[in-house]
Image (cartoon, rainbow, N blue to C red; front, side, top):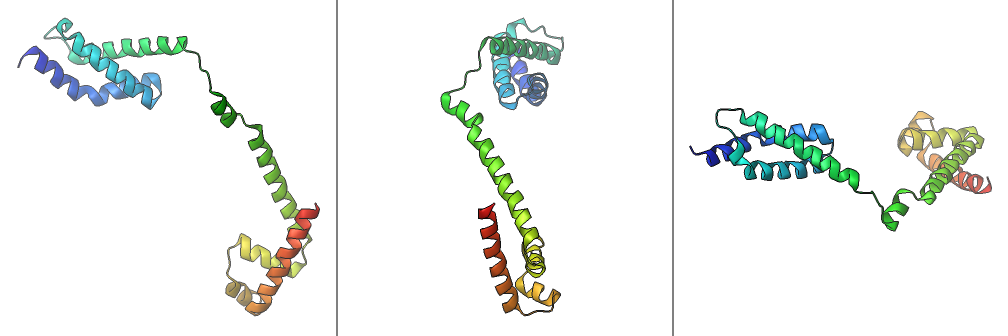
Length: 166
């Protein structure tokens, strides 16, 4: 087997290990793929400097380490600049406002549920918090499904009015 075939075969065998090593140094999957490709190119370009009888693995890993160092140096020179759209998507205060408004609505809804008459409160909790069907609720509280449906209708109407008032 000639030296070129040996290098290509060994490089093919080491791809998984080289990738894992590079990933452990960069911490980023996509960056590691890029650095691995660069390392492969350098290994193939520098194949004449590999000394037969020495550890190919150690030689390849050394080149990979230097490629990671070069990558880090390159990244440190680049400034991270967001486009206006990206910046607005990441740092959109309206999203925070919507979260607060939604949380406030849920708080108001909880308060309004507490203000319902006991029977309506019981039905609402069984239906929406426990996921019971009308039939199950009617069996549990010894009532017919039609009256449960009517009570649920009134409870929803009361909740809508209460949430909008507060």
